Length: 409
Image (cartoon, rainbow, N blue to C red):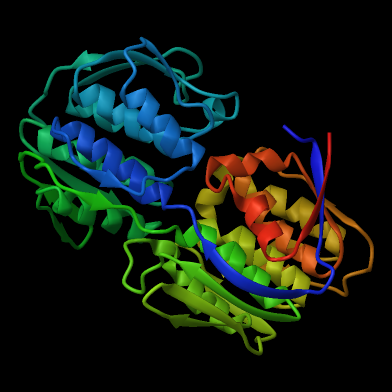
């Protein structure tokens, strides 16, 4: 892996069409559901992201020890999958993965009849999964303000439970669109569910064989919105995006309208054009926390003050993303601080002309969120290979629209 790369753009003018990677959120759910169906479903346009390729390999593996690496969805989805299918597996991951909590999911699965032990610290991977004996319990209460992936993991196995599942979500529901994406994909594969108030009910059913084509990734699109907002001139077409999307990060089109980018939906995808941006905005990221880093980096670059809520889940991602952002925006004369409980304010200042250098903290989104700032001045990105997690072609795609990249080993 390259130790760093330096990005610059000689003209600041962007023009071109980009084929985005497929959504790993959709792809990973489709892979788990297809595996639970026990049938050969035709899945098309599966994501090239490392997380999806990893999940595909692990679902086909007979190994007793399974390494989920740094992939949160893989760890959480496979924990539920191996439990309900009665497989005996040891499930582990990177050092950071073994620091990311999984207790809420494990406790819920234990109540349903899963035999799961912690091999290290209580509440964290690695896990030993020792089979499943149904308890007959079908009503669960689960906190819904931490990670929607716990909820999605439980929902996808719900049709296979002897009594089905009634899942009562306690507290503010975070990343609700991801839960709705899971339910929509379950329905596509023949399973009906009822989502009323804070309770989701799934009766015992069987998944059916179905074909499914994964949509392009709206999370990946967010970096191109940021590029257009920062460019001197721009007209970028992003292929394969849909106006009516399962993905919560579709919200980037509305957010970026306020930050200087107009979205025109076409038969091919979306066309992005520059417009004027606002100077002070407030945003709630509860339904789309993965967009926060992109917005923070952009606003620091264009001088927009932004008040943000709904960032709670960022603490337990690939890194503590709030802390990482607070550190990195300092080099841009900006500050990110919690002004009242749960409310964070980015206050930008005049960006000094110098080469900026950003650490990535083993987090793909840190690399891609700060890269667009190279339209203002040269930017060094440390450990750029982290983009393999979700967008392996990111640096090559930037070169297609005129970025100059120098690699340093």
